[in-house]
Length: 104
Image 1 (cartoon, rainbow, N blue to C red):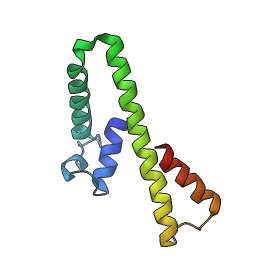
Image 2: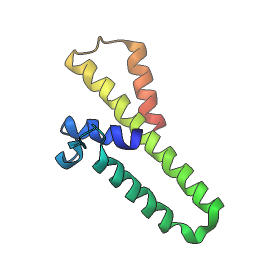
Image 3: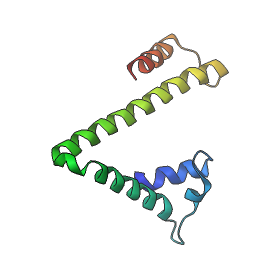
């Protein structure tokens, strides 16, 4: 579900290319699902020579890196929102955000 809905939502918000914001008549994000599937297939083909264990290790590392990038952006966003006054300033929240940035 995420491979279709996340790119669709981000395209509608203007963060991804507009062609991903279009859906089929039933509301299914066909283009986003096809693009995600294509990228997944290319990833698997690129690591086919490593065997199943190597592919699993590569996918696990890739997933970990993806999560760390999201942590970095979220922690940075908290600091930015505090600076703009959207989020109430809190020493604990600032410390957690800084720890998240360092961890990432």
